[in-house]
Length: 117
Image: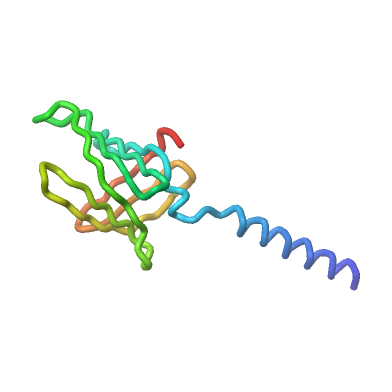
């Protein structure tokens, strides 16, 4: 009986440790990411972000700033301004590991790979 109690206690402790190590999406997304098209997006802790397209055909390298937030339903909302116009997009995010995630929304999908924390 004592052995069974000890095993249950260890199992509960392991489960608690695993749950405490799981990061929230708001923490996982922080850092610098690159998508399949070479666009580099950096998410900051204060909810701001930058997007840099080094291959912009018109401007060469172009950077825009904006804001990000996870909505209550778990979708990611991005808002940024380009030439005085505010653009907002929302998509479902699925993390496929510590260094990759995919965002799907509005008929588009982008795979992001971490390039720095």
